[in-house]
Length: 370
Ligand code: NAP
Ligand code: GDD
Image (cartoon, rainbow, N blue to C red; front, side, top):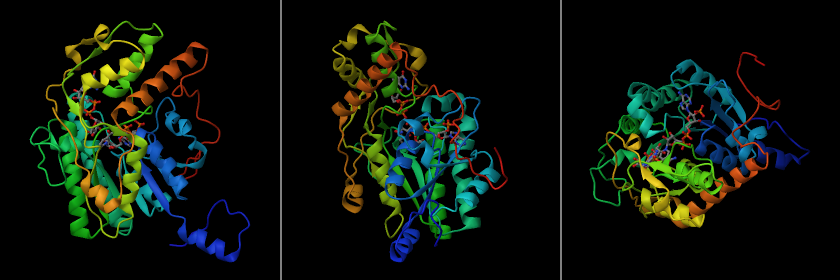
């Protein structure tokens, strides 16, 4: 579809036509999350016009978009996954060519505390988005943020696209529903809908309750003398940990294929939580054994023991390959958190301490607001 670019400079007629024709529009649900921020940056670099949904919160939650320096380039639309009308509004306003559905209650631990809410948001939320696409414009392409948690404990490793699923949490049960409803809409309605079955991916933008960021932040607090111990849960769990900025590229690649399909995205290497802690303390010149304690409050009612992904299909069909591996990932995260705490000691705010809704916030709806 031909649309006018908002920020046209003086261009030749040919340049103008090319640019208008090629400028794609993407809608990212969950743009305020880790992947949302990196994907927004990636798509802007590719020349997309980027729209993203956010939830109204009592304290602004745009710090990741500010941290990756794209906040003033994205268009924000208020929407909640439990509110179908707001999703319809977002898709109507954004007129996207591609929808990247990343929004979810994404913390496995919290899904044991709020299983029904997680089912509603993380499971049914997928259908709400797909229904709006089916009713408004079936040409919109759809990416579903599926997860290695689907595999649970039922498989030999490494896990591949055809490995069987055995979810171990309300979160992964909800994601299993999301996975299948995506395939059902693909087959029943001929919608370009694909599942990225992504294994754990981390970064300095990761939420603080996830174990990798909890460790990197905990190490930093110990380094500056704020804490003396780091309480963790299951140290034996094994995960295939990759670097989030690389994983968002795979999402885009899946959407550029001739036919929609499902892909595992991983590094094919797995390490334990304990190994992550060992390496993180080592980066700071400390011995983990002096600081890590096991606190049963962080042990889940059920846990996934061993996730390791075989990404051969993504390598062959998408040309995707991870570059940042475990040691480098841990180093990036620990150094980033030590840097943040040192800056804080010198009077700087943390990136997430945004004081107010910045004046340049570009919030869009059909009914005028602000
Ligand atoms: P994240 O940082 O937790 O971000 C989740 C996003 O969803 C946030 O923007 C959040 O908004 C939004 N959200 C939560 N509840 C919502 C609701 N009711 N309505 C609208 N938006 C809502 O997660 P992430 O790490 O970026 O992961 C992105 C997606 O990939 C998630 O679906 C996750 O389950 C999936 N996934 C992640 C990994 C991983 O290792 N990171 C691996 C496999 C799959 P607020 O900022 O307002 O909370
Ligand atoms: N969060 C947390 N906190 N996890 C701990 C702790 C702790 O103190 N101690 C041990 N763990 C263990 C968990 O029990 C789990 O086995 C492992 O560390 C990883 O936990 P998380 O970092 O919370 O991630 P996750 O693997 O449960 O889920 C993440 O990855 C999935 C992909 O496999 C999330 O990003 C999900 O949204 C994603 O789908």
